[in-house]
Image 1 (tube, one colour):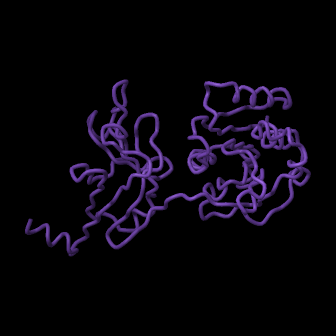
Image 2 (cartoon, helix red, strand yellow):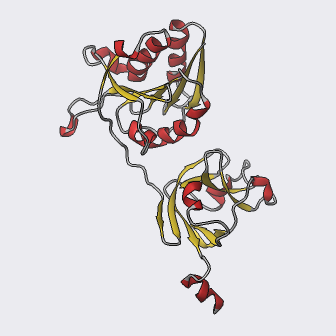
Image 3 (tube, rainbow, N blue to C red):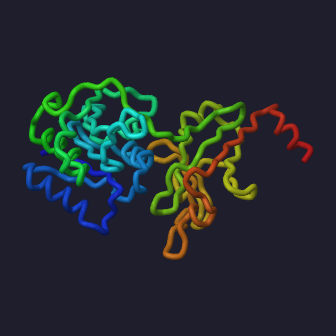
Length: 286
């Protein structure tokens, strides 16, 4: 059985996603269609990369991922070398997207198994009417039907990289950003546990965000380690720092996103005070 995932900025209020799925069902036998999300902000390839990065490792080899965000190719626009439908292979999975910065944001500092530019998509202007279906999905269907990637695309040696903020580490300080707020209002940051652990175990710290009176000084293993309504910080399944309010999402509020006013790109700081540090000495006299 083939598996194809869909990640788009199309939403579910229109017919576009249904058209994609109908095309798959009409052209591929015995295929499972998985929606990663259709709520990516329009043209936001960095957000699309976040969602795909967060879950692709859960899929088996041979899975084909179609990312229909900012899908229309650009040919020599603004003096650039354009953007073209492409295929990246990683861990024996296929990722099909316009080369608009998604691949660089998705890979970060990793290296792909291979990268390919889809052939002959410019010869038919009608394909531009719905490029996610007519270019990206068309290539995905051919792969699912058993065609080799070399029959669809040609090797290419580089891909574009959308800007994505990275967490930085300074002496006794990590500075990161909120990269996503989920449906529960949990604020997910780009601060990875490995970066946090470099400062050593059992080193006192304070996580600061938004206002001075908004802070957390302990990492919990789960949300329910604090009472309902209390703020909590955890490292999630993907080992990224989350700031949340336990059971804080309801019809009238949305967890940390609304109660703390945390939004995407907001700065989150972790300040460490190891034994003998200047801040610790000053604290003795405060």
